[in-house]
Image (tube, rainbow, N blue to C red):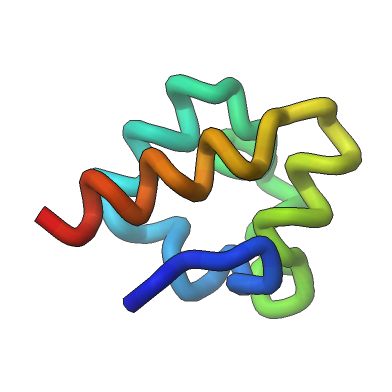
Length: 68
């Protein structure tokens, strides 16, 4: 599966390898109890935009490590 800015969080959040990368970038939804209710709606690119996270770098790292 290739991750893009449009990928919904519910598709990736429970993968331990991806979660580790998200934590590295201080991605807020990993530890937010309220995000669990919105996982089907939240897109990784939108969350990055809201919190000033470099989405290009994050998504590239996920896709690189996830494809191994």
